Image 1: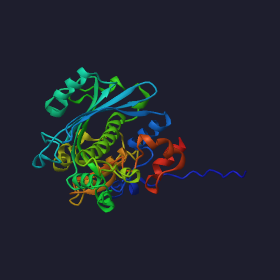
Image 2 (image 1 turned 45 degrees about the vertical axis):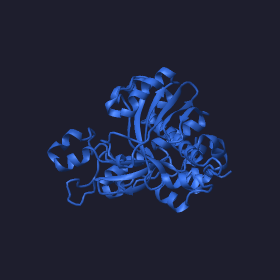
Image 3 (image 1 turned 180 degrees about the vertical axis):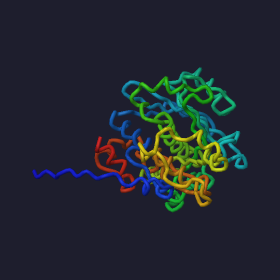
Image 4 (image 1 turned 135 degrees about the vertical axis):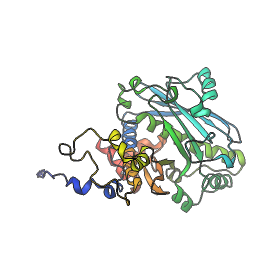
Length: 349
């Protein structure tokens, strides 16, 4: 077999690639945190089980989803609420949500569930323990939730164009980890292989949240009309991810108060590490902070970027990713063209 000589391609000029206009056009790669998580779940033959689903016809109650790996188990404890429409907000400073979550280290007992029920729905005002690894909250999509419940309960699939335009049924407003609000510090899990890469705990929480949301919308359709309700078609189900409204925290402050910029300055020296710094005028009047945000989100593996201003945007997480029931088929037969990059990751592993 003829061997092809390997050719070394030199890195591109940092003055070209490290500008905000180019960084702000970044997309996910196989190094993105979500795709690292998916590869590990498939490769190490993880199982995800719905161990509890005590949700009433009004969509209120709790559920538990347990991800079991080779050595450790992690359980998403989800609380579903009846939130009036006028209280639904994208803002992280909201005080009520359609659903609240925590990722429990192991399998929770009834006593754990009772303790978490008193605290998780309060989010920042509550208190979790070092048995919990993350804390998060989410709201239903105003544009899509009712449409999907109406369609499924009537016996047909939701409108494909509406699904394509929005791409999620719930949108997180915050996913906290790393010791926030009493949760376990990273020191507790960093030695575990599945937690070694950045933000794997938070990404697992979001992935399990996606499983819960899809089950919840089908449950509410059945509760509304048990005689005619149908589940989501598997191909349509895959099109839903978990949305997120994300904005800039420190960036606007640093833009408006450049005298403090040295506080957040990277320690690397650009002359020695030429790709460690943005090669652009971040004081320019036409600088778009959203470019910095989009670059960060590409590291997480976000897609479906929907800018709402030059400082915040909506995104989608795990859109088109496989569900646990078809991991094996996905890894062996290949996904749709939109997921081809993630599928190539699994094959390459």
